[in-house]
Every structure is written in structure tokens, then in C-alpha cells.
Image 1 (tube, rainbow, N blue to C red):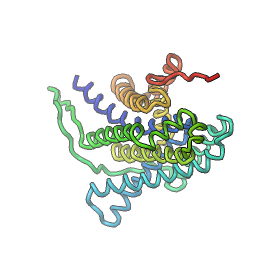
Image 2 (spheres, one colour; image 1 turned 45 degrees about the vertical axis):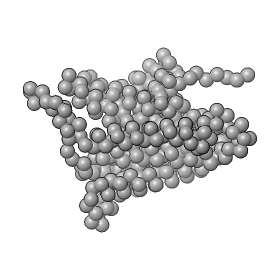
Image 3 (cartoon, rainbow, N blue to C red; image 1 turned 120 degrees about the horizontal axis):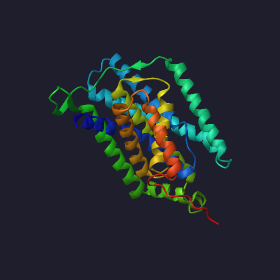
Image 4 (cartoon, one colour; image 1 turned 90 degrees about the vertical axis):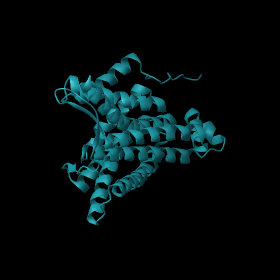
Length: 305
């Protein structure tokens, strides 16, 4: 029971990070109907910017950990959002009226470009980061000495994920921007005829998705303490699996899917094999596509005639 509880805590922490990345996938798909396979690289860039920011702050003599972490989040969000905006404007906007396969190929090209750009700029070696948030709360202890604990960093990650998800839900359902996004999702041409600045809404959506990916990148580098140029591809594929599992285009589905993927990965590592934990996510993807292609909360597409 104690071991199960510890893996549950680990899975919820990891699942929250996947959920933030998956939301970016599903927001872009909801409006544009395309899968942005370069979204994982935005998460990777966010993690690298966090490492660079921490090193820079230490170099200039800043020692206050809360200030360093805040700076890492701020700079990561700013830089990654800029990448997201430029990506949409240069790689996707010119292909707005092209066949669906064109922006998909463009996304794969952007993904490879960003991977190799970061590899050339930062090197291929893994970049380590010293633990910055120490301490944990002991929940229970078994007779043989096994301790179920919740670290302060896990608490911070879980709280931030919940706050961001609530904030995004309110943004989508209670604000003018959210209404415009939902209008574009339902019918982009009609939204444009009604005076909604569709191109601006799409750019803002990419910026929001990139910002969430940046937050996830900072969280993961603080949690694991390492980052390399290839983490974006694998995390992006898992987040895509989470989005498909929950129902691509559904924000609640992306949140639930991300948490489920995190839990599946944690329990698979604990009870089956840590070496093949990445396989679990893709097995789930295949099963979902075979049994319920629209996902848990997704709705089947209906062709209008």
C-alpha cells in the first residue's frame, strides 16, 4: 500500500507536467485542426532557458532561491512564447489554405530544426542542474524503513498545475478572448465574417500554448535536474498521446489524459519495467485509436453536408 501511494504521488506530479504540454497540442488542434509536432521542442527550449537563467543568476551573485526560480519561469515564458509566435507566423501562417499535409510536414521540419539549433548552441551533452528546492513531508513509514513522502517541489508543481488549469478554464469560458477562441474553433470563416481577428487569435493561442510548455519545461528541469536537446521529442509524443487519450481538441480531456499518462508511466515503471516505461504510453495510444479514436472526452467529427 505504501509503495502504491508513493507511485501515485510520483505519477500525479509527472502527469501534471504532461497535461500542461498536452493542452498546447489540443488548443492548436481545436482552432486550426492541425497537430503541431514542434510543440515538444518549445518545452525543451523552456527547460534550456531555465538552466541558462539559473546559471546566469548564480554568476552575478544572486543566491535567493525564490528569486532565481521566479526569474527562470519569467525568462523561459518570454523566450518560449516568442519562439511560438515566430513559429506560427513563419512556418504555419503561409500554409493556412494549403492541404492539411503541408503544415504537418512543416511542423516536423520545425521540430528537427529546433532540435539541431539547440544541440549546436548548447552542445549534445546532458546539462545538469543542482537541486534548488529541498525538504519533504513524510506521510507514512513502513516497518522495513520504506518512507512515503511528498517533496516540497512536488507540492509546488501540483499547486501550480492546478492553478494554471483553473486559470486557463476561466480564460476560455469567461473572457472575451476565450469566446473568440471558441468561435474560431467552431467556424473560422464565420468568425472572420463577424469581425473576429482570426489571425490574431491563432497567434495568441500559439503564445499561450508555448507559455504552458515553458512552465512545464522549467518544472521538469527543477524536478529531474537534467536536460538535453532530445527531451522535447519524447515528452511531446507522450503529451500528444495524452491529448489523443483525453480527446484531441478537448481541454478537460488533455488535462485528464496527461494525468493518466503520468500515472500509467509511474505504475509501469514500479510494477513492470522501468526500462520499457516509454513503451506504455504508445501502447495506450494504439489501444485508444483502435477502441475509441475520439478519446475519452472527444466527440466524433460529423461531416456537414
